[in-house]
Length: 346
Ligand code: GDD
Ligand code: MG
Image 1: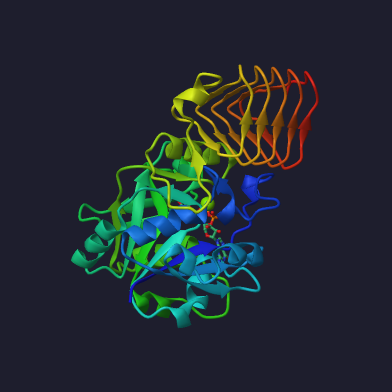
Image 2: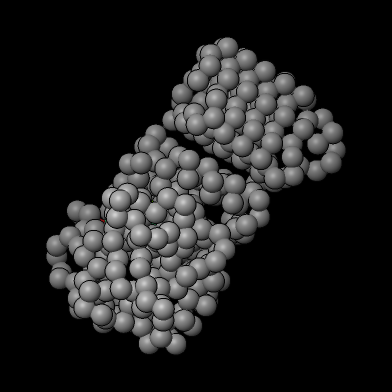
């Protein structure tokens, strides 16, 4: 049976301070723990058995998903005491894998149709298929070079800027035949991107690229996390089903405050008259006082925003305090329990 394996063992260092108290795979995106978006993607391809590969803060993740039944999936876990790298994590889950496997990085948001990718994989009789995407700045990603039939000729993880030859990169979604496990030695750290894929390309193994169209965004840094949120509220990525849902305001509520059609607010937020919220996401129990303005931003739960504060293109963690008239300029990222005192400018 085809299963999905989600790699969720990274530390999320580049997402600090947001991923300090919450492991990156479950940071809230549109008020929903991130992995729900991936579970949703996988379910849409009729795959219901998912292996979560964990290493860093595993308990916080297993507590949310349990056996998966509540969310219509069978969830299994593979733990590494020491992080074994991406390919090492796949190898460590070997005894849970019995067939072709869809492997996903735990920090990418996409609307790619995995059934189409599977179809492509089978048509090519590939041993490995890598979904690729075109990006503006490829140097932070795995650069993929293909022949005209889609076969991967070269895979270069995070090439230095002067070695970037194209704009097509690894989207962090793979379909792997079980026999690919035999290429990975057991017990030590191994990387798909630095070892397995470059080696397969070099020896002309059947490793193909599936160039995806549509929405793709990783959440590896605060700026990227913000873009992923915009992808959701603009409707480019569907919201997964989730028991505690957020809402968009009805007309009566909108007549008292200004909230644009894109913004997503948890039902338990309190928004005072005269506040303005535009293209933003607010988590549970936030309180926005008179005349405060929030634009293109994400506010996690329990934050208070005092009268006249202005927040633009910023991310605010849990239980923060944004003082009266304070101003968060574009690019501000506040970790949990931060405060901006009255009239400060960040
Ligand atoms: N279980 C486990 N063990 N998971 C791991 C480990 C590990 O040792 N190391 C990393 N991961 C998980 C991370 O949690 C993440 O979900 C995924 O593997 C990729 O690791 P990142 O640290 O996010 O890698 P990256 O963002 O620098 O680059 C990767 O993603 C790009 C697309 O976003 C590479 O796959 C690039 O080639 C790719 O372009
Ligand atoms: Mg990443």
